[in-house]
Image (cartoon, rainbow, N blue to C red; front, side, top):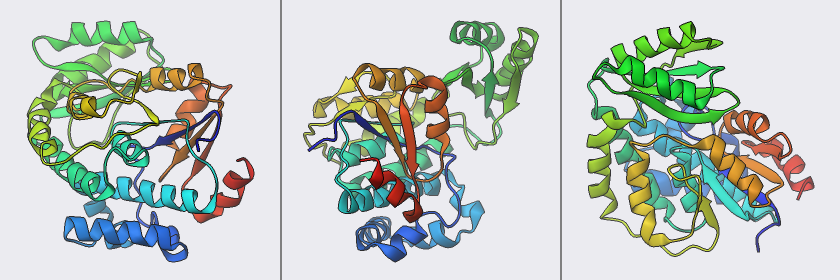
Length: 312
């Protein structure tokens, strides 16, 4: 039974930290089972990597993605066993969309963890190291960022990759084109334009090889029918059609994450509360800026449980 007006949202890459999920695993059998399932599915100890690092290995995209998914779903299973809270809708930021799909039963967890491990590998190898870049532009409107990317491209790829809301737009593309766009952004009144320490230029056309590889990967897995709507990154609209999931996930690799519109959509759907489930508080901060009327909380450790449960 869905809790009225509650959305569950799931974080993406960048929320990882050594030690994440360890307390859940030690205190709750539901979480311990998820970590054991992940280790078994991947054939190595993802648990140990999450709990002990080393940080350098955890930051590798092919490890980061299954690690964040696993911690998010471990937290979700604890929430499901310890509270009556259930979502009316779900959404996730980039990688987080896979967690959202597991949450509604569209993807089996063991399948999802294998998929995102391969997704991370494909994204990492789509562009040679040092060729691509990402940057965050603060304080410019969407149209202004699109225009400066067009002006900075000079035949190379540079485009918005994440519409994060609150005046924050991430751009991605060829390194030189991103540098030109950053310079233009400052000329045109951006508050800041900052390089992001990422290993590849995600969510732009340079990820086309990854999207093609992901199409092949997804063929080996099935998507189950699901009744709770997923607000997708690509469309910022509700999807409840299992037959569309694979195409949307493939498209997501090369299309921008429309997070601001996704949060606005959750508000329009009548959601009055959003709960970020998994490591970090990145989405909580973004949602506060996008939709101040939406009550927002996060669930990333057992210490959060009494507070979250009290609000159900």
